Length: 522
View 1 (cartoon, rainbow, N blue to C red):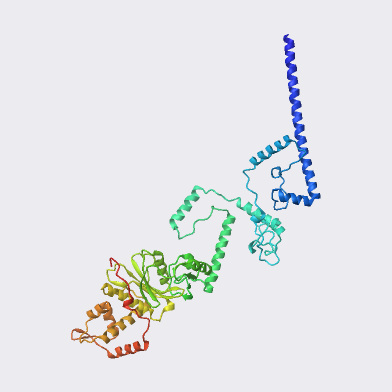
View 2 (view 1 turned 90 degrees about the vertical axis):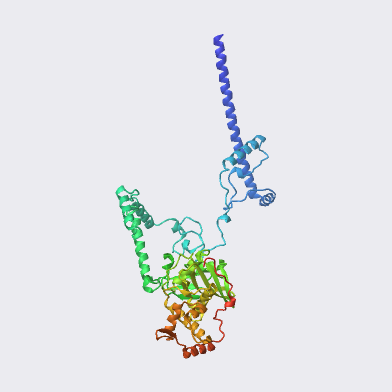
């Protein structure tokens, strides 16, 4: 019985294996028949589509078929094609739906296919005559739209750009071979040598460049340096750029092109250009006409920042605090240094007030000139720096600025004087102003004795300046131990004749138009 039992068990196992084998074979045959059925269905539908084009169009109007690819072909993956055949069984459709869902899960991480019009704008064309915009100089793109990438412009074809010539390939191999010899890791002795050189020379010498790159790249860099210096020498010989006392030769300021007189410490990248472009309202300096034009289209400034303390006609004066408008005042000082020799203030503008005179028209308030003064001056200087722009010189604006500075001193009830040293043109302007003030005072004076102290109190001019002016006019004499002021009628008559000839000029400060109170702490 035991033997028979074991035989029964072996027979049952063999039968189970045969049944499993038969079921797997039937499943394999079923899947093969399903694939054949789907393939035949696609072939029959495609043949029907080619034979019956109107029917395909009508079905396309009603069915939501997927879009064509940029090449015009229909999607090839089964997940993008929904094919229903009347010959397919219910099991086949379920199996196909499950396969589609699995495939969608597998492809969910892939990016969405981009359409052709999202990559290229076919309305753009290469500007080179006779070019069809196909190909690219690098050989990596199918189309180009600029001269820089046009093969025809560089006397090449699109195919030549895709396949480099034997000479180019040979040169590339040589460069690769030469760059293999680079020692990318500096030895300890080399690092110490580099550090010692940097500590010894700081920024006055070029860093050591050996062993930080290949000999080939270092040689290319040296050749580029030599070429750049040669080009700069040519420009320097032609006079387009200069070094030393005046690197910036001209500035474009508003509608004027001004020749500069002295050196101004603009940043080196701007100073070596030879020509500077300056916004006449915010005084921002730029490198090119294009940048200036773009800036002027966006610049909202039409007058200096600060408070307008004086206005008569088209002439206005703005009080600008160097602490509140630091950038504007720094730019103003850099601009002024181009026309002043003795100016030393550029960036430390916070302790100063700037009084900017402008002339207004329908486009804005144009800079005429300015003067600066310390907020707290122990020597009672009423002017630290004064400038009239070159395009407004010899028109009376310089005297207006000087007169306005003394008007502020009168309101403050102080005696003022300009800070020394004065520039050449500044000294001439101040002497002319002091002469005019003294002759006007003597013309209106009706007393018998003239006191320098009284003149100083009434005109706010420092007594030292009054004495020096009287001496230059030969109106101060020393007689019997006393200084006498001579009233020279010839000079007074000459001054009066010029005043009558000048008439009612607008180049005079009207004290009634001043709306100003002295700042606190001054």
